[in-house]
Image (cartoon, helix red, strand yellow):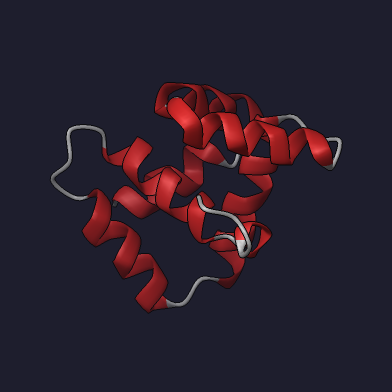
Length: 95
C-alpha cells in the first residue's frame, strides 16, 4: 500500500513539491537545482518521475521501495526519496 500511496499522491506536482520540501536538506536542494536546470519546478519533476516509476517499475523495484519505506517514521518521504534518487535523471549524481 505504501508504494501505491506514493504514486497516488506524489503524481500531483503540488503534493510532490510539498513532500520534497519536507524531505529537505541537500537532497532537496540538489533536486531543485536539477529541476530548474531543465526548466521545471521541483514538484513537477518529482511528479513526472513518480509517473514514470508507476508506468515502468518492475515488481522488484516496487518491492524495494516498500522495504525501504515500511516501518519508517515517514514512509511517504522515505519512499519518494528512493524513487527520485533511483531515477535515471540522476545517474551521474550523488543523490
